[in-house]
Image (cartoon, rainbow over all chains, first blue to last red):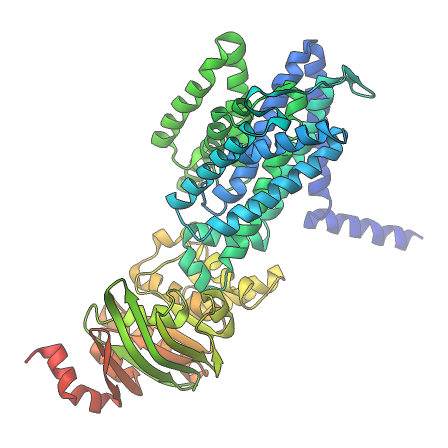
Length: 334
Length: 237
């Protein structure tokens, strides 16, 4: 018995040494503690506004992470983020107008629709490189917005109201529920980004970012990898858009295709750093929180100004973002 | 023949960069491809490897028509190349550069095995000590070795070395030449595009000469170097 116990103990020690389950377990515990602490702090503030502000910050975590899968890992700058976000928003509106599914069932539908559009867009545009690809994605967002403006059934240019319940079982207020949904999406998107980054897909995308011709000649099927990245990126942006009608309760094309979404989604990863999953998360938490603070203390009109100023500062002092700055300082010390 | 190119033509708008080139490379053969700047050597290599689509003509690899195949598919068949101007993956370390073809061509998924094979290739090209360095810190000869190492990681049957010795000193040229000779003795057919004539003559069993997009000579080094059109192309009238 003691031998069996000793062997098991050794195995546990070996696994821990190898970092087998201990690392993820520790990360999950810290994550759970952080989530619980966030809920406690937001509850302590005692207003739904705190939850809605935190929802907005997390929405940008999802969008920035999604953008970074194509823009950061593969180096293909997508200016059409607002288009993919709006596909999620309007899929949700269509579901609301027809079968009225709960948000958790709507999110996969929105992700699938935006992912499909991402795949189709990628197939048509990914043979273009650099600025030509970026312009094509911008054109996609404009085409989509024109379609929505002229589609009366989803409200057209005048917009549409979406009524949400006041309370939800378990979560209490609907704002608290929306925050929990977006928190789940943020965690999922970061896990997906991390998985991509550490897989052969991430390796291939990094090779494409550095030199696409050399990557192709090294056996990297660049078009397929970029299509996978576009689909995944589009799907996550669509997923981020799905709860938005319930958050804002009145959706019109100007809100869904907002310039603020397009700009923030690109600026946040650039400020945080584009080569790892942590960059967009840091960028979104930093800029998103600053914007929420500015909205309360100054005006929401200051939001884009903050992003603009920070972008200029980072382009000058840290062109590879916060993560790039930390890495270069560490490399210099070594 | 492992490579057979028939009537390969490449046009950029109204300009014909390559005009109906016929070319063969035997298995395990060492062939030199020479010609003045702008003669179409790199364009021809790009057409062989799929970086550029040929406007006309056909390319066969080991009997298979690969004219319409993408570059990555040709690389997976065993057609590997280095670039005239080194094109390393700059965000990666030297070892990670080597790991890309090991992952995508050889299809390795076992991390430990990939690293072991990468280390073996780095030892083969003499870059073991620089495995963790970034390409920006490499010297010119190290960058050339990295190019060759990455091409070798694809386990090629044909290696196209595009000016692998450009900008190197005499001892460095000899070092690269010895490496290419060794690879050839291991069974890899090599097409060497080069301006350094002593290297081409020492290396090649056969030399092909391109001038203004047309092939003007193809034969043993001594015959080709005595060919009047080659002499005229290099030395003038």
